[in-house]
Image (cartoon, rainbow, N blue to C red; front, side, top):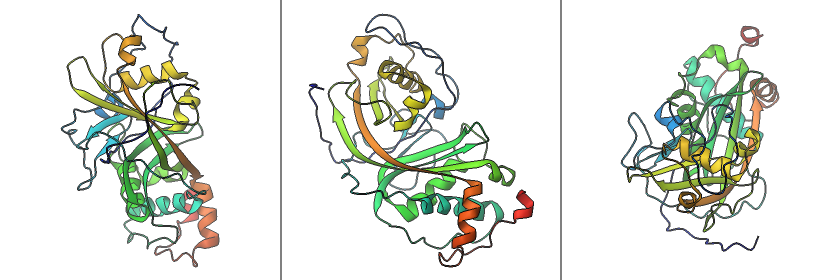
Amino acid sequence: MGRKRCVGGDGSKMAAGCCGVKKQKLSSSPPSGSAGPGGGGGSSHCGGAAAAGGEPGALPPPGIARLNGLGGLAGGAAGCVLSPPLPKMVVSAEMCCFCFDVLYCHLYGYQPPRSPRFTNDPYPLFVTWKIGRDKRLRGCIGTFSAMNLHSGLREYTLTSALKDSRFPPMTRDELPRLFCSVSLLTNFEDVCDYLDWEVGVHGIRIEFINEKGSKRTATYLPEVAKEQGWDHIQTIDSLLRKGGYKAPITNEFRKTIKLTRYRSEKMTMSYTEYLAHRQHHHFQNGIGHPLPPYNHYS
């Protein structure tokens, strides 16, 4: 409250990654001084940022940049598009079902599912896969560029399931244990104060210059900080580390970060819920493939 706020954007399109791989043990950093939490290593996805020129092995669709995992800008221009607020709940269970349809058809070699009946309006979006009773992250890739939902969900369903370099491609055997989440992003705001966002309400995207003078980016969806139990400083420092920043993190450096906050609508569905939903809505929704063989997954 009372902080100066800069709202705007240069109209250029961005793409982004999503969320944490596993819970990190972070202690709240003091306002200034010592280094923040360590542990940046791993793949380029976990590392959170590739140089702005591109990411090795990334396969973004033509004209669409994306970040995988925790960041990693792959060929997009800096800045965000200001999206209009969602007037009502747009995300729906049918979107998660559609993602399961797309993945199921791909894994079993069926023709892709027909176009769904939900809206095809353009939104920035993420598709997240988790697995098992403890809901471990299994893949998460999305884009800040507004995409028509039908093609966008097709694209990022398979990209997040098969091309998240932190994980091997998904297999048929994993289907029964999967959870699918669809997040639609809105209300992008560039803010002047890096603390001007609310844990559990806003997702954040940071842009910073690393110790080598390269521009890096990283993002967390709105639920990540709350799920990890992080405060503002812990979240910022985690993003910096995941974005590949290895130098000591001081309060002065945090003030140099360019931060964009945003909101999202999210829907999550388990594979079991997907089967039940499809059993009831198979014919009226025009699904172009047989229902999964229930005895195979019992």
